[in-house]
Image (cartoon, rainbow, N blue to C red; front, side, top):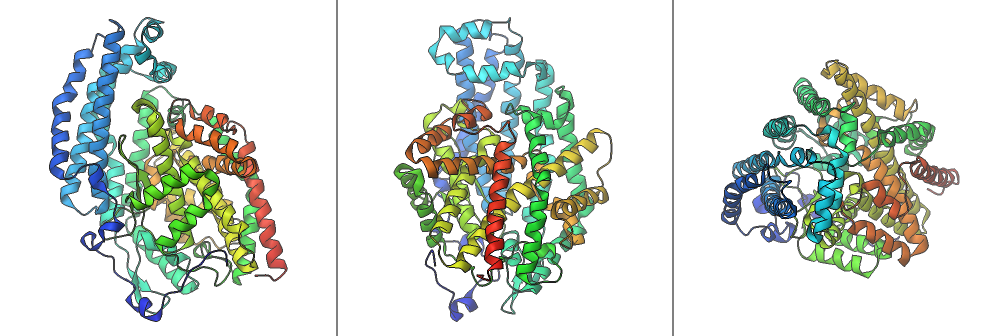
Length: 618
């Protein structure tokens, strides 16, 4: 076996939780050190009040930005100062809310923080229009007169690049003022999905009742008991079915506001508007979908292999997550998960390993699920403090990779914050998934390389194939769903629940092929995907995965020189455009090649799994 472990004793199994703990019952060492942001709500209130007082000070620069270097620099410094403080206020309030979304105190803090961001946005609304109205060459002249102002060169260049999409200051102020309203659909979905919806209990593998939750759903779908998988699948989607029209209205409203902003800013589509924020051509999005469509026969082949290895006459959607190799999965306690991640990421060098250990020992991570806690996993934080990671850790291999993934985000943020001024510390979404997925690729390579036993090796190969299915294929399917539905809204079609289900069901049929029964419940999966409320985000999981495969290969083959190039990428923040940052690390995402190369790796591992199955080694 590649890594040590133990099975639960009978006594431990009987004591295992079937009901979620309250937040108050969670051990402090298993929670994140939110006190590193603020020791108390009272401290938070002090900064909140300071922001309320100082935000109006930005107005004293209005109408004066063309006066000279000192005025423009003064405005930028004040803007940075207030945005840094607002970020800290916002992050703290929302992280406390995410600990328990039922908590009224932190609901109030989060709402107030959001309102303050809107006020800050309103106070800054004049800046871009005023800068863009200056005579040509004025900004460049000011940059040449001040080394302090020259730091903002990339920021101003990107602003001027988008000049045709910036409105006059009155309309920019109006858009800023309605910004809080635009968050409505996302807020409604978030509260419904995290605080209100409850799923029924089902019968677990041991015959005892177990409550279906967001955090447990995937674990239940990985059960060796097919009855458990089916019951969990039907229980979860049965609840979403009850609210399908409400959820369609929330999704439709979010698409409408995105289409509105795209039109107001004079883009050809809201897709173009979303991608242009990171200077990404629409062709990158289309190339991804095209490349994956060309590779769908490989996915269909994988689905048929899964059916054979599971020994079922007909494969169902609830059979897609259970490991194809029996008895290879096991429970992995969190302490062991940390050690596995440290070992797997050794190719990134001693410094990277030291930072990982610091994150593990200094409570960067909120580890376990509790009642009301936000579902899923993420990395977040505020400039000037260490990053934070939210998990809902379940003791399986998938969650070990989630830990590696989120720590990839966290250390990307750490390197970026440590090496960039505030204005460039926040890297763009397009590169956000590269570091996280590179960690996963390195970890899976380590585990496969150190495993000799055929069944264990097959289990890990299966896991890697699943990463391709869920990240490269499935996220591209999500991206195509978004492109279709947003396009229909732009054409004036009403996105009813029936229409959304029809589109989503059809995509599942196309992507997964004829060797699986596409259960009717899966038509409602769109209704539970939080990322759809950040439109045109998910495609970057697929492009990031492709780039990560290329970067991890370079690191493993070239060693320290490739690691240093990679760390330069991590340190870059948004000081260059995303495509340029990746080119610096050796990957060109404007071409289809990285996606095609990643899909070729999928085929290679699929062939190995077919060989292992054909030789009866598993």
